[in-house]
Image (cartoon, rainbow, N blue to C red; front, side, top):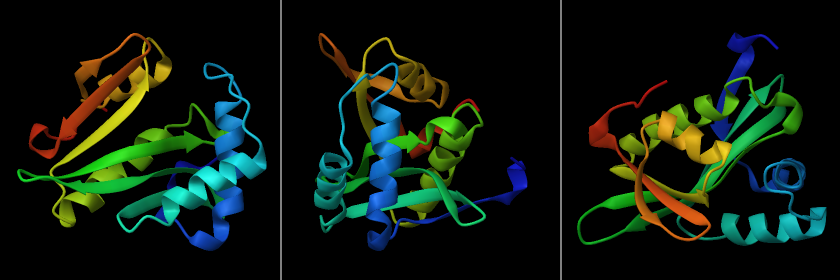
Length: 160
């Protein structure tokens, strides 16, 4: 895969089945080992994509979707934040920095829309936790199995 040919664009509702397939493939393998069906994944993503504050981008190569990042904006009295609900890359494209590029691109686009921070939740002690730490996310809350992290745009681009 030639790095230069990867493009980023906003997610489209009519591609929900493709996102659901990537989602199910990603989360049915290590380290998650979940049991997502296409139907359940489409239901989850459909509900998310229909929320008024939904926003998402996908990485493509020659119009083939390789992965996506999506979530929703949250306005508090102090700031407008983005909660990243899902970030996943099709298994055959993992390890090619597509997730990093999705995250970097999302940060740049969200700043333009007045968002001042990005938050995520993931399982503790996983590659996902290390991925977010590598990109400058700081732990805000830790539970028995889950960890919540935040990245403020004031911090800069993080460690790439």
